[in-house]
Length: 266
Image (cartoon, rainbow, N blue to C red; front, side, top):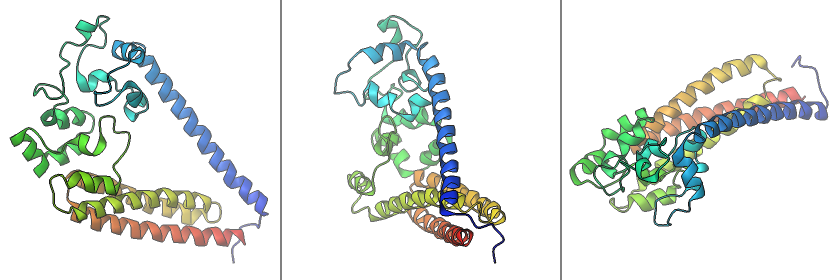
């Protein structure tokens, strides 16, 4: 029999609500700090200051609002990191020196160079991609699948399994494995998120179980991150199998959390 003192539903709800509110507040504070820091950096960046006022032609790959809503903007990564140019120059002519259209082989965002441009920050993903048939085709033909194919310019979203199927079908006949593997990756990410919430809800019911469950959960998160790298290597068979394994073990922790929460409610 559990030795945990029985609490009224309102008390249990208040405790959980308190945890949720504390996390929301901490998350909001962190977001504000990052936004303030990024904003301070933008104010010294002439690329940002100019393009925030100027309406760009629709023919470009993305707009200023696309960038501003992206993780790149929140991290202080501005135009020059991908396109080149001088962010300190006040004149447009000087600021745009070295900025070339994407179809120019010397451009930092040309398909052949894009992996290295993105890889300046996303090193592990670049290294995984560099050893793929897609990278070899790019080097040989100057065109093919790149970071942009999956992530688009601002990496604001990931393709759905249906979108991935359509994009892969441009070159591959019935890319079922890629679609299935991506579906499993998405499902596993969602399960990890929900399981962590379930674990936190059961924490007070059994702190000892929660402590060891957190260790197992972190190990699964590391495995999931390794799977993400294998996705950039396009090893869809390994991605499918390993995400199934992570999903199965994550589900086991979720089931345990549900049992612990029920026991604590008695």
